[in-house]
Length: 190
Image (tube, one colour):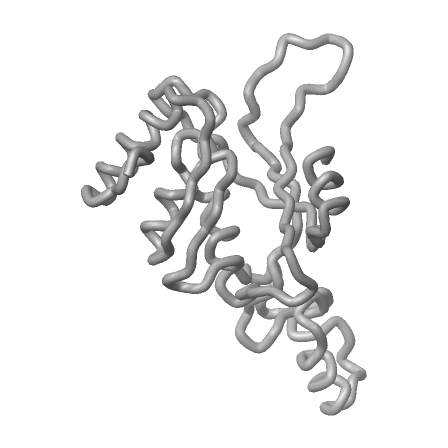
């Protein structure tokens, strides 16, 4: 949160805070507080208007056969309901395509990674961020590149990436992962 607040103070817009719910969190041997089973993802932009592809990450509604909670609505009211802003789609039922706007709590299991980096994000967590926030062929920036998961997911989804990482060991891990995915990876020295 301190990074998010500092970025806001520097002129960035905090559009959404997303909670990454970890169904399989790392065990902690603590007795004075609950074990942490979530992290935050911050959706930020440099301007009030920005690229966001809501349809790329929409999710199935929970009750697709329930068209509307009330049977007493007129056809006009039902059309108005379906024509509302995406955050209202699926609230009482379903949209016409059976999808709803993605919610701000994402349950994504952690994945083991055999290399030295113990806090590697699972690709399933990064993919919706890239699909929603970067057009096909666009460039994704990850200022904390780590083991290169963001670059891996960007490549797999037709995007380019820029990764910034201070730890030289992690840079080598990322290079190996990315070269296996895309042999023409251009290293940091070029």
